[in-house]
Image (cartoon, rainbow, N blue to C red; front, side, top):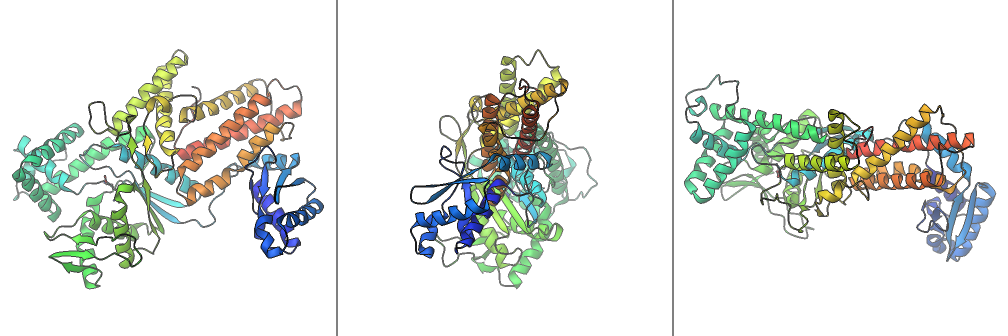
Length: 587
Ligand code: ARG
């Protein structure tokens, strides 16, 4: 099912061809002067040279051709040779009826579906999550929803940070607190207790405790380093502890991410690829991908045309240990063996740009992935209303769980103001508060071009007015209740006919869904989806204000408008779904 823009492009392209010019001059897009005409084509300007004619004369020729072939299009020439195009009502009506019947409301699948791996979230075991992890989760989840909707075969992986010094800190700090556990005895190789010796609160306490001590005490730090090295070398008691720490963390993370409506297929981490590292390093050495340098093994990744020198990737440190980049390379190998992705997206803050550039180049050099198959989807930082990096009131790092519950708290207050508390059961009210709180967080993050920094301002985000997630939910809820009322009054939807320009304007927004999807996918840009959702909701508002539905006397017009309302709701729910926003029944 082709969009209006595509139909116009092919009609105008054919007209250019008919007058002896190339068809690709016929690209049509929505006009930047909608007061003059809804669509325009600037091809005549570009054609002038090829045609050896003034642009206006080219435009006259194309117009004459279009007039004879397409009586349903009104063509005007403006300025030096812009073609202004106004389709007649049936063009809109036919398209709207097609959209109304389509399950996907015009959103098509990709013509080239791929196996896609999305690496996002990336929280670290024992370290509290900060807003950077929140951004990664929200953006990554939207991208996985988008890529799935586009027909790609997607696997998402949270890629836990569970293999660094923080694990050694946990082991040693626990040893100080509970010295009698079986895990520290180097001669005891199990079996170990099934019950974890710690809770998530213990983990949250032990790590900061240890790292604070280690800051002023080199010996304390050295102990943690040694424990980390032994853990990585496979000391059984430490490995058993690691497994407990990871399991306890995963259980807590599943709760947090579940509350946020963010899903991961795989809950793997850096530690899961440890067994692949030795072989990978040997292979890199044997094939000359890695070389020795001052006792370390490195991969040179600088390229001639680099603007700034990219340092070599350190595969094995001079102390003999594998580093962050090594685990990322081993993870690429693991994924190649397991899912064999054709494209991998890493949704990680732009502070890690050099790291990923090093890892990708090393992977390409070693033949672990095809050039271009690994992509860093970068994002900027989140700042507080003071313009500085977001902190809690006490000055600490924001924890994801606190942020979610604070958003929910504001949502509750806002819903109570709206009088909803009295109308719903407690459970229903909580569900709506959760949906609204999540929508506030997600939309305010995703609506930004992802590489920019943005200011976190919950009060603004939970507002039902303006460009917010709750505003969009509210618009969708309004349509839902309208449809319900129509049903109660026995009013049936029917074929779309155009009787007002607000209807055409709404159909133009519905029509643009597929191109928004394409751009969002191409640029890995959920903000394009947010723009589309917002534009659609606004067009619906305009339509609803200008075109009465239930009170409309003309039965055919009433039925047509009901179809438009239902189609808008369906598309709006799909787009909001791609942003990770649920629409409640009431709010
Ligand atoms: N755990 C890392 C951090 O907190 C993020 C992981 C990103 N993904 C990756 N494959 N390196 O910075």
